Length: 248
Image 1 (cartoon, rainbow, N blue to C red):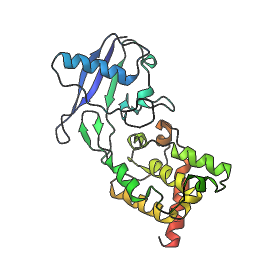
Image 2 (image 1 turned 135 degrees about the vertical axis):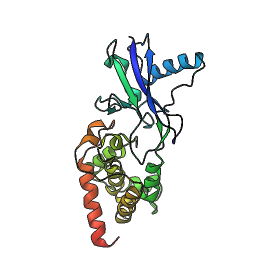
Image 3 (image 1 turned 90 degrees about the vertical axis):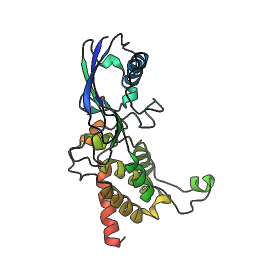
Image 4 (image 1 turned 30 degrees about the horizontal axis):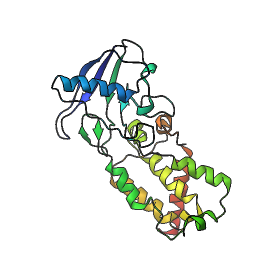
């Protein structure tokens, strides 16, 4: 396949950016999207040009590093699929593909398609952990947990913190990410001890980072590569309201 790529290029956080057009010729349909970009970069390096900067690590849909907006949709728009799992067979010969970074004030651009997502790390540092003593693994395993709670907690824990929810939201809200992190701990007995302090501190940190408000459009759930359910936001809101009444 021969493709035309319109890629956002920006040398540094404060430099002006613009779309640059590249040709990607001889693309093999079984290539992943990132492998296609690797081939394009190899050609740029051979010509002595600066390669396109983009994030990646595991390339297995686990780490959440592959943060690209493809044709206006984070991760390319295929249900439950991260950019690194998107294959070129989903495109057609002669297609024009627009590639840009996450667009959010809380995710400043570092270079080209790479954004700084430290805001998520700071939210986790504010409360996304269990600090109470839970004993060793055998002790923790001895605590009976209802199957429904286990399943919901694991569903929430599947969040990889990629930031697609923020990139898709018209308000750049991080509610789905924070809700997943709050929910997966508060559903378990080990996490209930700090549940009120956790949700209060994480929501406070989210607001301080400059993320927008949630207006429940559902765009976050639609692009999430781990299909985190919108109902976790409702759960977090209930947790936050309970914490407010408790004066936490």
